Length: 627
Figure 1 (cartoon, rainbow, N blue to C red):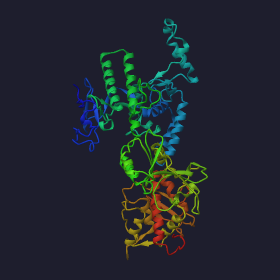
Figure 2 (figure 1 turned 90 degrees about the vertical axis):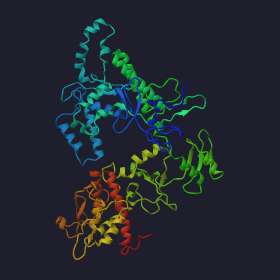
Figure 3 (figure 1 turned 45 degrees about the vertical axis):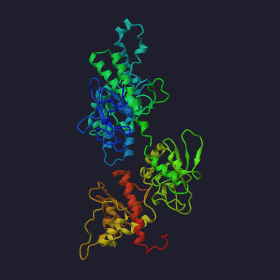
Figure 4 (figure 1 turned 60 degrees about the vertical axis):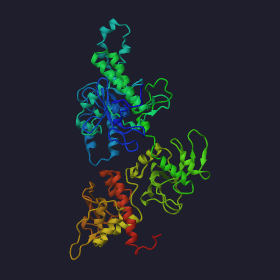
């Protein structure tokens, strides 16, 4: 009689982890609560077996023939459209190719500039019919509506390829004489099938220099890696096996069932290749393997053959990433807190029921105990939640951006002054709106596309719109005066103001050594941009501020700003250097050379430093800004 013990070398082998509380993992010898699972790989033995992986072994199923990755099918088609299907070179030649190559290799080009350059390359390549390198005919590449993933090359579709189409049809004259169904109209629609093997060979022949035109890393991200030759075997803990109450069977997870099908089809394909089966049989097994791998990755893949009798698509790896498994303990505590204690919850929506349960009344402890996965808890907003913030009227995309919330007392919104310009906001009683995304997809999109660090510059003219303003400019101007000096104790105290004790700051040499060691305010700004020597940020630019007169760096008003390798050598920092609306200032140079994340970090340090330093050291000069 069969038992519930997993078969050795099977897809549920205990060396991959366990899915029940009583068994021990045979790899780490721990229980389910402590074992996170282990990856494995499939051998090409007969029959195939799953073997535990280690650092010196493979961690995948070796496929007999390559297949397309469903997640990269769009990128695969785009690369195929841009290269010659004969010589694998990018369909650009001469001065045009060299011009685009210089733009893509420009170290000062940011991501937005490279995206626009990449789009222009794609548009030009789509119009090319004859390859400038090998003179081969190239046409449109597209994915066809088929039960499986098929990419075709319509080689003779363009009007300029009419003569080549005529030559192609003439080659079938003898076949047409023997088969009356083979008409010219049918031959004119002939298409080239770009199988995964053909695509992989084309991608392998792409020169490293052409990878730059495709915005690919020639060392770590070669295009042939977009085609799958192997597949991971995920741990058992993410695809648990549930034992049945009656009998000795079990309910297997969708991923486990799909893994078994992939291994069986892969073994059948191997047998067909070894025995010299007909081309039709090999292609059928290959197409079926492609379907199984695609459904394993994403069960909602449109256009693929669905399982017979299945009421809904299987839950592939993509669907598992949408499930939150570890928040039930936190939500139970929120339910116990109720609506009167923060952080708490207001109500519960039970899965499968239409009504909600108000937590103002009733036994919240019992409701917390009965809470299960699938229920919806209307909890309070908490620290680090992603929220959308806007002010009417919202006239452009930067009028609404996402922030990470910090719940404080009272009933007013507080945010960094640097973000006032996109909202056209000031502090005279403006009314603003805050929205809390409800789904994981909405939170992910808001945190990625609408966050402030990714919207520092305006799309209107590319100038920074989020920059220093008001007190930040005042403090920066006062701090960079020629007569601002600090002893060691004061200098270290000022440096602690720019962070929250998490930055590694290296103390530079003193500007004045004798009779006492003194540091300048300009050195504070230099450390604000580059706190230590391990930091890769190196800023170099020169700028004339408003108070500039003559003689460049020798200006008697110190109005000529000079940065060399992130060190401020001269100049008073004011609006032209730190404010918005300029492509020559500090923040634009940081965005251009080192990315928006580094510019946002520098801006955050500046905001903390200026607000605290102005209140602690310069408060005696200004009487009306301290609340």
